Amino acid sequence: MNARAQGVILSRMRKFDLLVAGGGSGGLAAAQRAAEHGARVALIESGRLGGTCVNRGCVPKKIMWHAAELARQLADSREYGFRLSIEGHDWAGLVERRERYIRRLNGIYAENLKRRGVEYVSGHAAFSGPRALAVNGEEYVAPRVLVVTGGEPVVPEIPGADLGGTSDGFFELDSLPRRAAVVGAGYIAVELAGILRGLGSEVTLHLRRASVLRSFDELLQKACLDGLADAGVRIVTDFVPAAVDQDPDGLRLAASSGARTGPFDALLWAVGRRPLVRGLDLGAAGVSCGARGAIEVDEWQQTTAPGVFALGDVTGNHELTPVAIAAGRRWADRQFGAMAERKMDYKNIPTVIFAHPPLGSVGLSEEEARAAHGDSVRCYRSEFVPLYYGIASHKPRARMKLVTVGEEERVAGCHLAGPGADEMLQGFAVAVRMGARKADLDDTVAIHPTAAEELVTMR
Image (cartoon, rainbow, N blue to C red; front, side):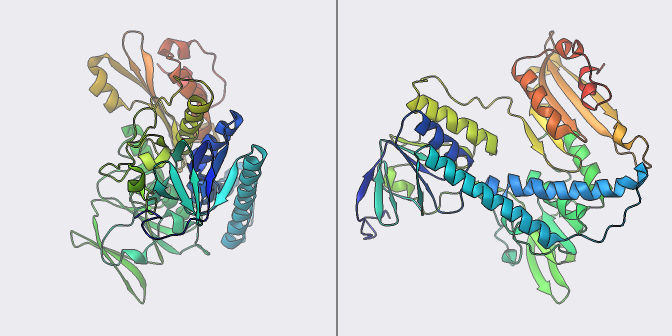
């Protein structure tokens, strides 16, 4: 029921050019760009500004990943002649500094909104009618409403599931669990497993099938599995969770097959995310959702309700922070900046998985390319020991693949696994988007000695 139907008294009506429901990356980007074009904007957010990415996603995750990488480098330092004495790890101190940094970002976002003249409303928004939102007893109306409320982690509906946490819960841990279970095969699962293991936990990763990152190229799947195993993560395959229970020794997981694992001190579910639409009362505005609960939109972010738009994770389309930011800015340019044809292109979107080693991907996997282009696909691979490990006794290998299509060998996909993959992918993503040929890469002078030079020297 909407606010009026529930008998909520709305004290007054406030009018704007644009209402943005959601103060995450996409909402902030759209609101600020619209304001730069001269629109009078109100942005409504019930939590901390920055949304999932800043508060319990990309940013704090990357900080914890840096910590795990530093632990590995400290171990490697002996190979380079250092004799260091490490007196443990201060998890609580790291978390305190991480949260202090995030609070600083929250403040910067609020100041940016103020500087651009965007009115920031702290509270939960619910539709009170077409193009109208009720917040804290007030009604806000505008010709355009943009819903950018993001997503939330899924917890499986099995007995005892609430004994575990999610990625949100990971960032609430006040100490490093000695024994940790992670359930899931996507990028969140492998990232959390790698971070926990890198900082000293005994980690068991539970997979429903035999591999991880199944939507990515097989090269990345194998590299990720090898990296996890090399780090000491125990990997359990074909494990479909059926129940969780707790005894004096800790948490235990039961599978539908009858298999059991444990005991564990912490359990993290990383089995997917769903659009966050709870409490929005979309029906009051005539907004429809699809089978997975995602708001239905067309290529212009238009919902089924006139004047109501949606983008980012709440639409279930390419659930990545930079995608929401880019889509939000393009939408605002089109709506308020007289750029009638400006819209988001969802092809060739680069992404990185902060595993150990990091993995990067842009464009088509080999499997996707062959399905679309058949025998015109040609792939180039490289596998090598990075120079960093050249003098080390331990020699993990980096892997790279270029997927090309047609007689001109246009680069349709680029897949990287190894140190520096997260940083080097951005430039090659530009090349893929511009339609670079394999010959263009071959004609580029290599930077030596680097891992990236392998991409321009493949034969």
